[in-house]
Length: 356
Image (tube, rainbow, N blue to C red; front, side, top):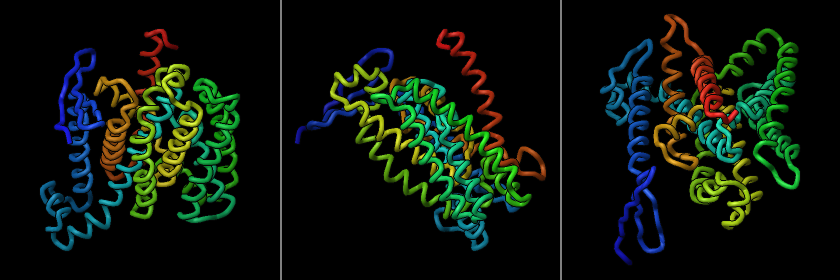
């Protein structure tokens, strides 16, 4: 086996290339530093989220308890009550960010995300059907959300198909379907009983209240299966697709096949994330853009986007629990306020640059 060789390249984005045998891996120091900083912030936020509440636990005690050296009371509070909620927040944020990064790369538009393209609205429609029309419980709600998201994804893809799927056409069809489903969701709410309507509205806002391993487990399994496939199987193709369909095809990418698989992966992840915590808004839109600005690296930057999305969701949930004394705000309220401000700033920036 040949010894690993390290080479450097200069340019707008400095990089280190590690070559061993037939494998070549490009490492960008700024990307690695940015990812390490975001992961450190995520770890701090997670420890603070686990330690705060009616029974506060010091950060050192939280770490000790997670390592199996806490008191029985601390073990119960950490492992049974707070850790499942934080784990769900982390997975939902990472999943939404992954879905958003895939869509933004595929449509080559910073506004591309499950929120803007109608997929989370489809998941909401499925959940409302399960609650309002079928009278289902938590399991039925989750199944309805996943089914609604997947069926909406299939519908949008079929409507956007015309000898292939173009990014702009996908966005326009998605916005149209989103508008229709918004009206459908409003009608379903008017049909609901008061208790069901209250339950549905809390879910539609995006909430992590009472979330446990039952919600985190399916999403974790989906990410464990799809993430390696996306990163290893289609990572290069996704980077080439950002150059345009003609350039990617000339370089050997089966454009429509790869796009279909990546859209399917993004829709599945978004649907399961919505099933776990409701349609938490703007995380899928903002996390990929923030990750790209932190790393200043070309390409989809999927890993960085997932880390930023997880940190945003955990931080928003922590803020929502303590922002208003004596009252918990759903995580979707906090992300909606922060994400709405980011969207206004993004639109102003894009307009100033002459892109819209």
